[in-house]
Amino acid sequence: MEEKAVNAWAWAAPTEPNGKMPISLGWRGGFISFDIIGGPYDAFKRGENADFGVCLRAELCPEDLDVLLPIKDFSVPPPAQLEDVEYVIRRALGAAVAGKRVWAGCMGGWGRTGMFLALLAKVADYEDPVGYVRRVYSKKACETKDQCRYVYEFEPTRLRRRLYGSAWRERIRRIVFWWR
Image (cartoon, rainbow, N blue to C red):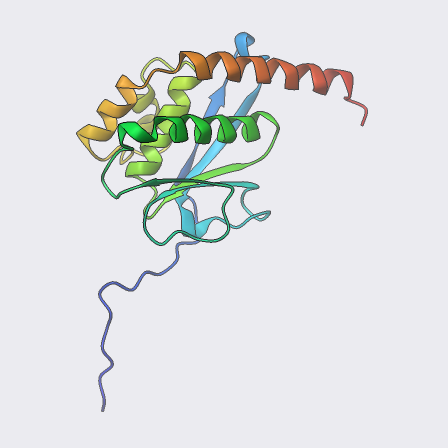
């Protein structure tokens, strides 16, 4: 009987998210609430489990994504990538405020994904964003000290103002055009 070689690096594509993170913007954000889904990016299925994909990995980048923020495994974005980080946060939150189901993911959906979810929570003005993500999404979120430090040192003020402005515009649009 012939034995087949087993590839130790074979990756079975996950099919489920690791969890989701609810965001409620309160009165400053037009009382808009939404969930951000997180998990391995390979489990993202456009139209089936989400409408907008944020890929956070630098390796094995797929074709089907809306925005890419390439971050090396167990790492953080380099300082030169700050504008890209802000752009991806704006796109993801803008899609969520507009009512799209947003999926954020990397390879496993814990470290880089958890860090990105914590950045979203920080922009949405959650007091302890890493603690919040670990509580509602996964205890494994933000795997490294560098990822946690990146979240705590991230300056969200400009993005927060834009988020609240777009949320109120969406709230007004929903009120004015509720019959459509």
